[in-house]
Image 1 (cartoon, rainbow, N blue to C red):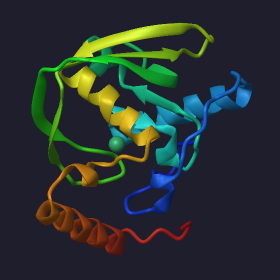
Image 2 (image 1 turned 45 degrees about the horizontal axis):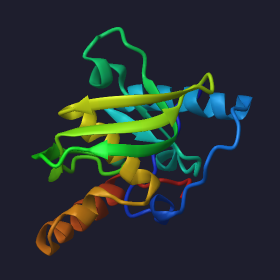
Image 3 (image 1 turned 180 degrees about the vertical axis):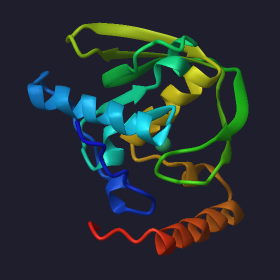
Image 4 (image 1 turned 45 degrees about the vertical axis):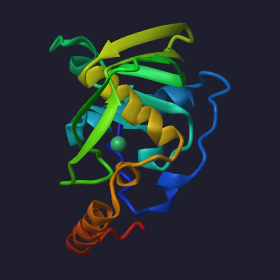
Length: 176
Ligand code: NI
C-alpha cells in the first residue's frame, strides 16, 4: 500500500480531463486504498485521483470531515455528480494538497448534495454542510480541472504562482 507522490501545481496533469470508472476492478480498489493512505499521510481533508496522476473520476473525503467522528473511515466517491447546492454561500479559507502552504478564501455553497458510487458498487447520496460541503465541492472541482488558483484575482494568482515556484525550487522532484 504505497503512499503516492502528490502532483503539485502547475503540473499540467492537474488540468487533464477525467474519465468515468466503468467497473469496480481490483485495480480501482487498490487505487482507492493508495489514495486513502496518501491522504492520511499528507493530512488532507480530501484527495482526488487526478492529484496522484490518475484520471479516474474518484475522490475521497476524510471520515472525520464527512461525519465528525474520529473513527469514521474515509468516504469514497466514484463517478460523483453534484445533485444540489444551496443558494446560501460561505466564504472560508481553503487549502489543497497540490498547493502546499497556500491558503485561499473561497466562496462555496453552504450545503451540497452529491451522488456517487461506493466501493461496493452501490449508489449513495451524501449531503453535507460547512466543511464537509466545502471539501466535496473542492474535490469535485478537481475532476473538472478547476483549482484554487482559478478562484482568486490576478494579484493573488501571481502570489500563488511565485510561492509554488519557490516550493518546487526547494523540493526538486526527480520523477517529473
Ligand atoms: Ni485540492
